[in-house]
Image 1 (cartoon, rainbow, N blue to C red):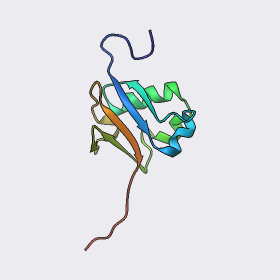
Image 2: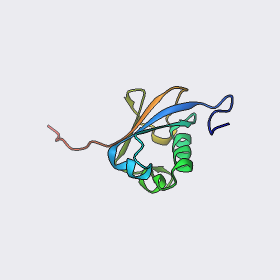
Image 3: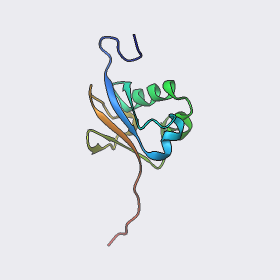
Amino acid sequence: MAIGMAAGNKMAQVWLYASLRQYTNGKTHLQVPGATVRELVQGLVEQHPPLEEALVYEGDLMPGIAVVVDGVTSNLGMLEPVEENSEVHFLPAIGGGSAF
């Protein structure tokens, strides 16, 4: 049985932005089991170990990376819950602007 296919495991569809694809042999998206973003990241790193250096910094998401779960940008980072069949996007964080 494939990773994540055992009964009870959640499988999210994870999308990676262009510069992360170098760590996945060009794959744009992967199915990964997990109930939180942290578990998804652990699954991604198990499948593609070089992703760890691009996604993880001191146990959290790398600064400059945002995670979007089911269309909502997460403020919880690695703690964000993920549902079975969730769509999760790792994107470069957008910054800038000015205060008025």
